[in-house]
Length: 122
Image 1 (spheres, rainbow, N blue to C red):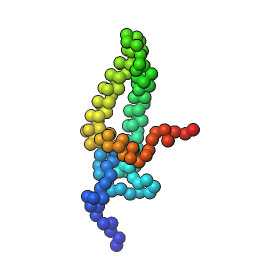
Image 2 (cartoon, rainbow, N blue to C red):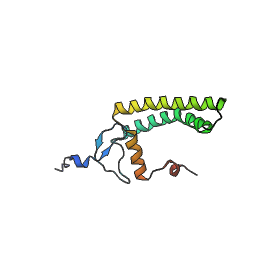
Image 3 (cartoon, rainbow, N blue to C red):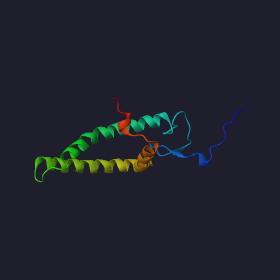
Image 4 (cartoon, rainbow, N blue to C red):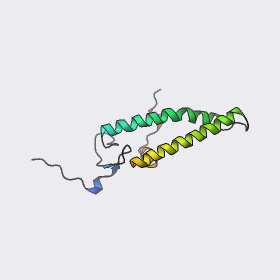
């Protein structure tokens, strides 16, 4: 009878960015990032929804951030920045409720060498 040894606390080195649960590292290739496939799918679906809302606001803010005061572009810049701040606050609250730390997730991406520009197809 093959029984897997119990997982000790030292082996729970990974934290799931989707639910915040600790899990044992493993898997093939670069290893597991999420505790389960359903958690990974939920995380990426939520990220896509969040990104779909944020992308046009970020683009508008970047395009208008050096606008001359009292112009339409300056108004758009203020509105976009205000909306980004409000949306980020809602998302931070959602992350806190789920036990997720977005800074830790980005730190993990940074440490792995993963960059968005490297994933784009040419």
